Length: 483
Ligand code: ADP
Image (tube, rainbow, N blue to C red):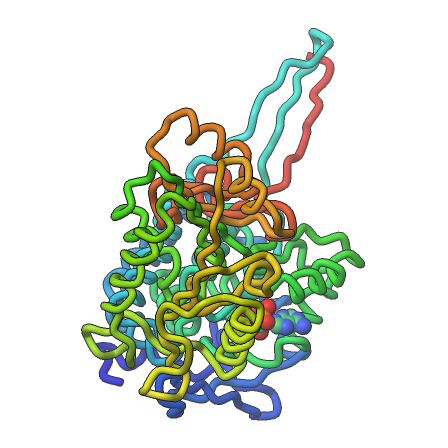
């Protein structure tokens, strides 16, 4: 990998401002999902190193929270500038460990950096309130104070953004943080950590430890010094971590699985709907929690929409994300391939019809063909579980009520999308959908300004937006008497 700044590729974890190896020298191999080649080795740390990171975060937080919001803002802003200055190198590191096309990786760095920029601005607005007391000689003040030491456990599908969305508000509020990135994609996190040092974030305020998920996660959730955990990942791990956090009553933010419906009504602009479906389905090879998992199409436009979608999908170029014209990279690992294959064969066994693709790409390895299925029903696994791969399943519906019921027929509630040009329907459907976010006539909803998060079993809390700081803040009520 050719980097303009090779020192961004770090093979040590960052604890208390120092690059460290695991106590026993153990390492984890980071491999490239496109060809299984070794990219780098990172420390395989456990409980002892995690404790050290937590102690460092505790000590550093005292000084960090005492600074003014403006001082924290200036430093975070420098971090943003550095992330953008090194956008291409960071993207190359990401593509090497994660597989997504380089253009998408660059886009993710800009998206990640936007949260640091946003919360650099928000750091200046950590304002409280003055409330009227029911008695005339008293006043009520409400302070918004940093929660304290926070922990973040992040997934491999957005190696930079999932960290930035947590670290931005945490550091802006005056919290410190210990991050455990996914074992598949620690190098992007370590490069971000290197830039955090260059930006002037004090030692111990932002720590990144790599290694055994259950050991590190166990300590982060058990240790009473940690006052908050923010997790993005699978629902099953999220539930376990939430249960572990119960013992010390930590605050938790969870961004878990989704099962996003993408509804195409009979009055939709079909070309726009196809373009939106392509983005919502195939970004990151279908490996995002807001990916369209179920495409529901009205009977009157079903054939036309499926034809147009098939044509668009045929143009997707599969390959190594480092090659410039590639649009669909490899899936992250063999487990991901197995899940996609399982959903596909279950659907075909239950009567789905294959319109395109249907198996591994000719490139082999972890490259999967863009796959289109029709005649998909709720009897199939694909209707209830997140596929996390490039399979587009088409369901048919006949009226608005049926579409809403189908869309809501899931324990998840993260994102939903629909296409319609009828203003009455737009409000009816948007209000009836059980999800934290709704894309209307768009397949791309996430940015730093909107509150990202889910309802039902998709999670707790919101990331980004002017509400995002709230997840890292406690309210303190002061009652002043004798005035
Ligand atoms: P995915 O299936 O998308 O990899 P996971 O929920 O397994 O999602 O992983 C998300 C993050 O959670 C990763 O950083 C992973 O290492 C971490 N993780 C997985 N299992 C545990 C666990 N038992 N305790 C703490 N962290 C875990």
